[in-house]
Length: 225
Image 1 (cartoon, helix red, strand yellow):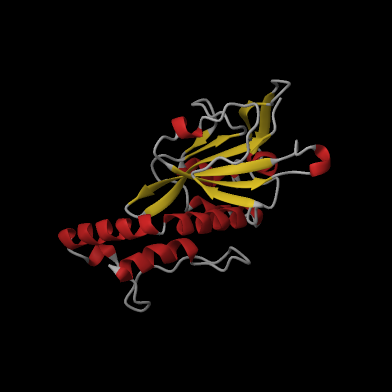
Image 2: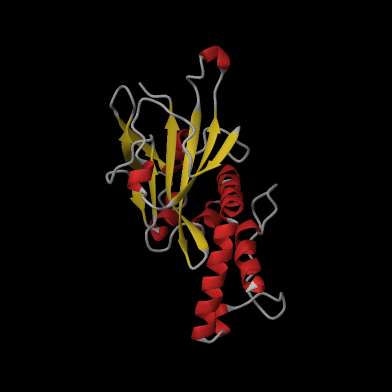
């Protein structure tokens, strides 16, 4: 079980956080990692159950590390590696403000892979701007620059698990919309001289499958009218 947990944990924190570009190593006899496909079904189920229990104990450290990894991949525009973190069945939803709804742009894992390649110049409607109500019509690279990575979130002022830090006038419904799921919030308090009205944060929502966490949502938040 320890070997399997090590494998699962390694799959999250495997790369050097300074460059965010290394790729994970597959399980094999050469590297000593456990390949679940070679285990009997009964043993495989037990190994997975034991590993999930162990991961629950270390969930905060794992998800905070995964959060840092995610932002480093975004910072370095390594979207191919980022695609590997997206939930294979649910896909990923993007919300420009704290109030999340079904109409927010959602992409399957396959669709996301095209956002920064074949469809990088295609504009999408991501919601409406706070205040004016005008539609947010941007390409994926433009949206990421404004509503995903508009600060150095790989090294935030504060980082919390399943706790909301930033609070504005927009109703934050993350606990209701993503009920039972885990999320991190990376937060900057803003400039004191501006009365902290320029605070901002990004929440990453994760869903676990057999001990592996996948991204299912990215929510941007800031002071709103």
